[in-house]
Length: 423
Image 1 (cartoon, rainbow, N blue to C red):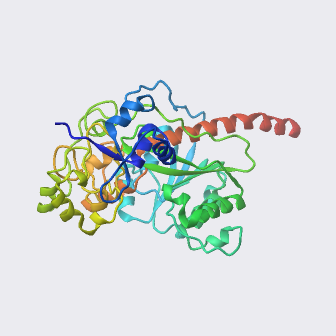
Image 2 (cartoon, rainbow, N blue to C red):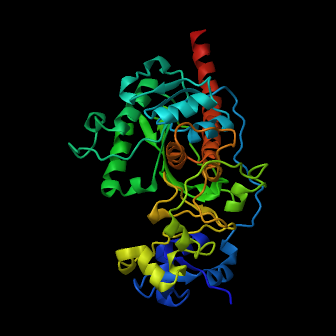
Image 3 (spheres, helix red, strand yellow):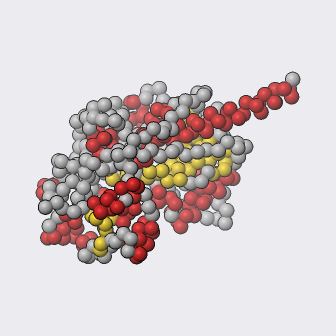
């Protein structure tokens, strides 16, 4: 007897490329009926039924002829703030951008950067301690994955001084000091709703004040960019106001990569994942997770063990599909966190009852195998979990290079005109 697999409303919406509200409407209209969980009454769907009915929307086996690759027509440079272990920096480097300075406050992340790229200028310490004026009009891009912090709102239109004390203020300060043609900020999707959207609007008004137009905000899904992980990043793009060249986001690919692609030899990697350190489950937790099949979660446990494992959460409702979750080989991994064995966001290996190892974590984030992480095992997991997936960063890098190529090509006739007037 084959056990049916049920997926949440969010997972069904993502699978077929429709919004959750569309699926709710279809449920009301009888077009795609949802089932109800016995305790919470939340909508769940029979995955096999959804795949059968909406096969045309599901592109996991599609091949791609399209590419975002573009050659830089000049040597472009980038300053990266809040660089972490280098996920964004490696991706930009792979695309063809040259990192001239990287800043982070975490000593282990900085040690990782120095170990792997001794030639990079790593500025370790509080960003407030560094002045970037020496790079004024000499660098093409400033990037940064600044943390999401609330502002103190002094007026209707938030200005740079109102953001003092936040790390976004420091990001904006560096952009102002460097004056690059383009700046790129990245953050979690939750920034859209943080403080009811006021935080993001404050950031936009600050960049506007220092001379940058903000491109339409986009949420990029890592699975659309050769990353075997369901991770989303908000991208904030500022283009200097004297520039009319348009920035275009990287086009998504059709093929969706899976955990097998991450950990086994194939299109993404030339070899199986190397062995490495990893944390273990406590004895009782391992005994419980032994009962969960690949792609299963706590609902697949016997009822008495569900209650034991979930505690009071069992009665609170909601899907909680990350709890006691074992990833399947033929699906992308769920978003990695800074700790591989957190109860709310379990990421158990498909065959072995254990969390992913450090190198498996790195593979899922598309780090190259030769990239070595510094610090304790916990510090390494933290660095990897916080990173921008390398392949996603590379595709963003191609978009930046495409923009810069067009900008400097459009600038040539104007420069010739200036020379003719001077002559």
